[in-house]
Length: 338
Ligand code: ADE
Ligand code: ZN
Image (cartoon, rainbow, N blue to C red; front, side, top):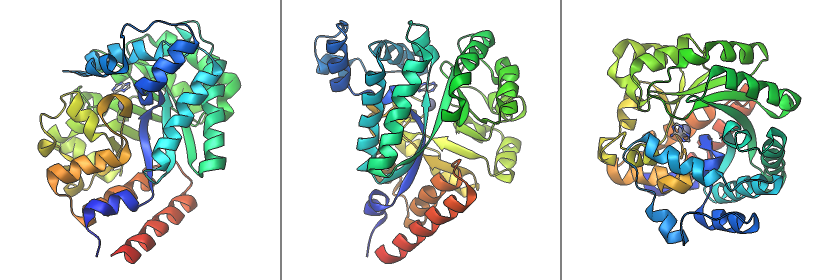
């Protein structure tokens, strides 16, 4: 008889909220900085890790943009992405929908082509060698202008066959979704899926904005939706996927203690919540570490665990027949393991 605690580790699952630049482990960062002859403002990997102490989202973002500054060549983006795939393969992740932040690189003079071809080549190799299917989501940085987002979309035009969707990330407060209404409409016209970070630090009004102004197909975080009953009813009715990130929430002080994490409440209300790692190199863990942290704090049941794992496929952008296959596989494994 299996308990919930080792069940999550064994089941196949999808990751739907992962910033590839947030999977940049200090060892690899030092290695790439070395080969690109870039000095990091830290003497050792340990010194760098000590800087990962955040009291809000902006503290983290400052370090995150500094870290990605050593990525210059196509091979750098390949190595970053392939390292992530190898790591989550060990957690039985068999489908990923990853974000990348092109403006964090083009602003530094690295071409869009360099970034996307490195990431995409690793994703194709990961599919072939590790059996991990993928979707690629280009995120706009919301602290920059909508004009800059339009320029990024123009850069992306020759590579649209590699891109499944667009997202919205970076500093939430003061940068409401409405700021990007036009560019999201243009992305919709191109047939791209749309997601946005909302309700991580920002108020429920930002979640309404993501739904009504941007027409999102899925919401990233969404924690603060719970403050608005009408909003919760809408998200439940539409079965809108929420990509929740427990260790990120703890590290960025969205929750004070993992025991206060709202994941159980979300499930009880009927929200399509999923578990994800966000920026695992900075927040202390990958997919299974996030499940483990919830189990230790909240003593999750087998039913809750299976629900979260199945939600990861239901909320994905895989075609319906593929979702059905993956769900059937989870059901079969749960039956065998019970
Ligand atoms: N970029 C990378 N991680 C992020 C997060 N958790 N929120 C907003 N922007 C991000
Ligand atoms: Zn995120």
